[in-house]
Image (cartoon, rainbow over the protein chains, first blue to last red):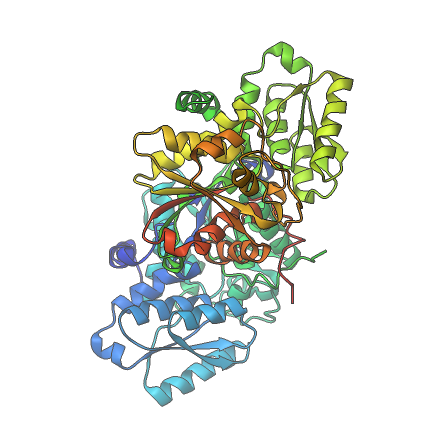
Length: 315
Length: 315
């Protein structure tokens, strides 16, 4: 089991290679939510998302020998770009298994950072199957996007900075996909002295974590028909027990709520964020009564959006 | 003539009512430009642009008696919203003369901040004519968007913060419209001990300042057919002499260059900025040889963009 100590060590390890991203506030969104909101801007992070944290932690831990084998992963985009950046920095090669429907900007990001793309279908089985074949063929080292303790510890550094820079938080809201970010956040928030409640925000259209918690065991996604292209993965075997033990609630969010919240962040905060992270604001607004008068940290996990394909009409 | 002292006093006067906006950097844009770029994020400012600085300075200087008369102005949008905010805070009423083709978000901003809109045509004559009629009818106090010493001193506080927070700048690039922002910037940059060169960035499609400097006297705009809706005004009588004395160069920028730079700021910095301020980056990229290896401050003047009308195609 990962501990606070692992997150602290990960932070020391990755600090030279990442941004300490700013935390922004917005008075009109405070007013609207009736709470005090603190947005941790990982959309400003290296390679455009928090994923560089876990990826850098994992890559810095590789031996030269491991690195020579080449690195492989599966990714909805942001992990692939981040991993490629971290591996290229150490002089290695990365293969990234990505679904055909990945936004173009995320495909370009992988390439720009030196990664090589291997296409797969959108289903979880195709993702994992193509990765398995690749590893068999090349003998590569796998750095999984979330089902990996090095990744979970690395992602926990985001909540660590948020808590350090923003005292007396009551709540943190994190997006939920495979469980890397929320996993690290949960460990961080529950091992510090003044515990902080952590809520997950998950698309109704890819609500495997929500349903898995209800069932008490991992249940696959029924659909992944969501605009949140970063939240289509299946909760991981290492991640699920952390959620089960620590998470306060998974709040499921409709597509319309995600898009409304995204537009609010764009228009009022002047920040470009992905639907996959505007979902945290949607969750706060959906549970307004519960969250009112609280000090809430929201992780704006990334900003890699295809500007030619926005979810509102052009007139 | 306005002095550094006026800007310092304005800053003390407005400090409680404005944000000290952050300065962001971006390694990929540094690489592209061959310079070190420091972006002053006035898109995060109250009411969405730097205009709140001058407006607040002017409004705080009004007597109760002046305030009772009502305040009137002409605006391409951002000044109107900022002025309305500052006047409403003091309990007064604002009339804003605005052209019919003002982006919807700017119209809404004026209304949301308590201003009342009076429509005019897009030409400079119509703007000033409708304002004149309004003042005759109502006896209102006019706070002009740029041709006003209180405004110029207020706008100068933006460069003041940039210089304080970002030492050893060689150059500042400011957008040019009526000359409020660049006027205050020029005074600031030329009255401090270590002088800083100031360049203006102006649309080729509304290049009155450029042509006025060549002619040595104010010459009206030939066209204002530019996407930079904040840069369609005519250089002011009070502003022109400041430019004439201090500005290093006005760099004129095509529409395509403005849009390319806007997209770069959106995609790489994850910031929503108006075309009227992405023009500063376009200027730096256009004069790459001249600006290389310099430390350059760029004023990102505002972020009020109509998200339904973006200057790139949706696919």
